[in-house]
Image 1 (cartoon, helix red, strand yellow):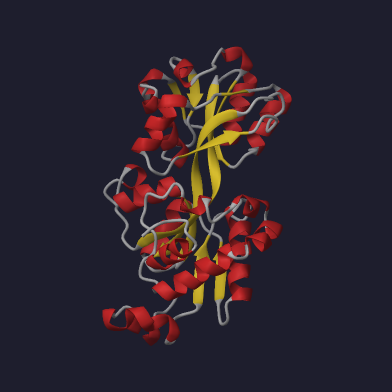
Image 2: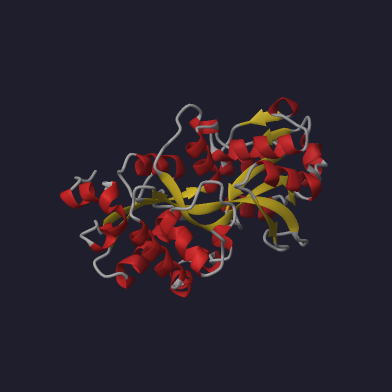
Length: 319
């Protein structure tokens, strides 16, 4: 995608690694995002604009992609320097597990987590489902086959002593899942997305829904086993007819970075981003959910040294 110039080659040499950012380091970067109709692409564009306008000589291009898995491969292969990804998918890539079984990707590190993408479990009112345990024997959509949602569903069911063999499993998109609940061919579905999700909004408006909590000891156990989960709350009123807060688990949209990028450059970019969150929030609604405090949560893939230095400086982490 891009040619490697002599300055980049110098940056790869240990002898000059630390000082490369001040000695002709590359400043033309790719930020891999997602599809143009999704959240990652405009959100990434807002981040790129902050970097480009606040850092002298910086030129970051937000590039439309197939999202998390593709972004991680692009970074690992050196075809992108940054990417917006789900932190659970990043964990799989780093460890060579689940959807990346036998395909461990080197060269990926964490800059910081951004905003929560909530694992929402919705059921029809007539299904009688009120807890995760009630999903046993029910018709449940767990997202597209091989998707991150499918693995979220597997992990949460596991936390309640269930497997896919205990449910009548369906692999459907969010829209198809909501339609299935509406027309009575499904009892429940898993949706991992920012809240509110448009498919669930439509379902709540037309037929109504029940949100199923993930809480208590089971939530603690799942978070303990899988470090990329964080606890969150779906506020009452998020969907029509859901008046009470519902406890849930979330994975987090995350900025991944190529591990070979020099420390000083990543430090400066991390610092500039988190010192301009007001601008990010004005540019994109999800920017209002980003903070330095939450950016260090849900981390299971090591920080890039430059990002770690910034978060340690402001007291968000200890080294």
